[in-house]
Every structure is written in C-alpha cells, then in structure tokens.
Length: 207
Ligand SMILES: [Ca+2]
Ligand SMILES: [Ca+2]
Image (cartoon, rainbow, N blue to C red; front, side, top):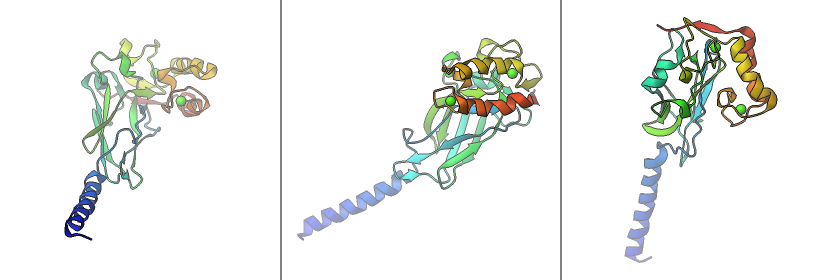
C-alpha cells in the first residue's frame, strides 16, 4: 500500500470512528417516538417517549416536556404535579415513561400561540405535540381551548364518557379520544379510557 493511500485510509477510519462517537448521543426526531402527552387525574396512564439516534437507542438522554404558558394555563393540573417542565432520563432502550397527573384535551391546532407542547431530548426538539386525557372536557362539555371551567377538581365523568363514546363506538377519528396517538379511535383507546371513566377518577386541582 502506498504511503498516501495508507494515510488517507487511516484518516478515513479515524474520521468514521469520530463521526460515530459524535452522533451516538444525538437524537434523530424521525427515528424517535413521541405520542401526545397523556393526562389522568390519578396519574395512572403512561406516556412513553423513545429516543433513537442514527446509532440506535440513546441511553440516559435527558427528555424534557415543555408546556407553553398558554397550554399550561388551561390544563387542569393535579396538586403536586410538576409543571410546566417535566423531565426524565431514558433507559438503555431509549425509553422514558411519564405519569402526568391532570386533565384536559389540548389539540395543538386549537391553541392561540402554537406550539402547545414541545418535547426535547438532549436539547434537540423531537416533536411538537398536544395533550389527550380521559378527562377531556368540563361538566359543560367544553375543552380547555374552548374556555372550559373544570372547577376545583379534575374529573373523568359522565360528560367525558359521552365525548369519548361516539368516536370509539363508530370508529371515526377524534383527536381527544385517540389516547394512544396512533391516529385512529378503536378498541385500544376504549380499553385505555374505560377504567378511568368507570372509576370516575378525580384529583384536587392545583391552585
Ligand atoms: Ca372532565
Ligand atoms: Ca388510537
């Protein structure tokens, strides 16, 4: 092998190795998974975010869910729930799960000043999302973006049940009833919603 070829190939190998190390902790939004943030008055339902880079799943990535001031201001937050920034670290599979205690369906298309919710991993914006909840509406059937008034407790009640029943029973898409963010309303969403409605879960609203 000629000297220059050898130098060039060595440089190439070092360069590739360096590129591999440099990109290992950098999330790739198109490979990562970010559902809408699930709010439940008892904090029982999981929102799992998966952070993946070009080299695969990213361990110990700092995931930050940032609610805009508008969104944070209209959601029903349970007492004790950290907000408007909620954060955690991924595991070796690139996954981090949040149990957010609150209520209110916030479709990003309905907020005055988008984005409604931003999700970052290691400082990289992964996605702009909204919130979904078994407690979608208030007692009058209004959503947070429609000027709801949930009062002093966040509640999954009869009115919420009626809001969720129609799309799920008839299988048409409704943002607020697609609890698993797979862009349809079906049995999986019904299974997710039913326990909260059946038990009428509530929490005391944060002041
Ligand atoms: Ca409700
Ligand atoms: Ca669904």
